[in-house]
Amino acid sequence: MKSKAVEIDSRITPQAKRDAHIHYIVAFCGGFLTVFPLENIVKSFGSSQTTHLIEMVRLLIGKDWFELGLRFAGVLIFALPIFFVTYAKEHTKINVKYLALLVDVAMGFLMWLMPTNWPKVVYLYPTFFAMSLQWSSFSGSYGYAASTNFCTNNFKQTISALTEYFCNGKNEFKLKAQFYGAVLAGYYLGIFAGFKLFEKLGNFCFTLVTIPCAIIAVLIATFPKDSAK
Image 1: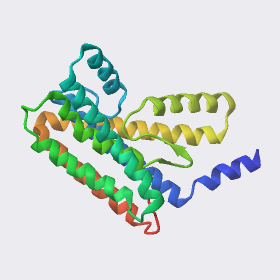
Image 2: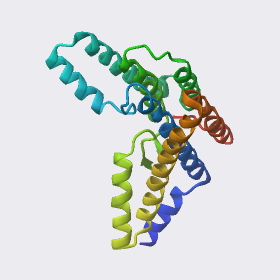
Image 3: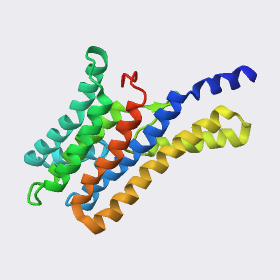
Image 4: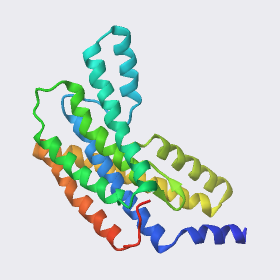
């Protein structure tokens, strides 16, 4: 038991704590930008591919080739950042975390500037690109992987860790529950902020993602040896 406690304590380094705090704010950004397609023409969830791919099957059966092509373009837009980050981590010195933050800001401004007369599925593209790059660049902390742009697995991990902790009292599950719970909280605070600010500012509100992204960049810079890999 003592060695297990030492193992848990060894995870809670200053770097790991900083990475965790960064992850919570990144999750806020993920939730915030998720509001764009929900509040606009699409009225759809733009942070994962599940619904998108299901819709492609329906379009294939219905032989709606034009929208199917637009949906396929969305798949490529989501896949490209995953390919790029995977390659960049192994073969370049690019700091993909800074790049992900820049893309979040750029997509926030694109969300503001997009016209309202394009095909509906196109309004998923900015969220697809930003969330895919963000998810691939920020993996987690304390040895736990947690998505910053959707919550199903984070919710599952929080509940299972809380159950284990209350049943067995093991500190490893307390840390796990705290981490995943905080990521969930950050994500839904971002969604709350997105909905409230959209009421006041419309799509201009998404440019305000610049603020949390700037905070994240400062936090990353406090550990200059961070390779973002």
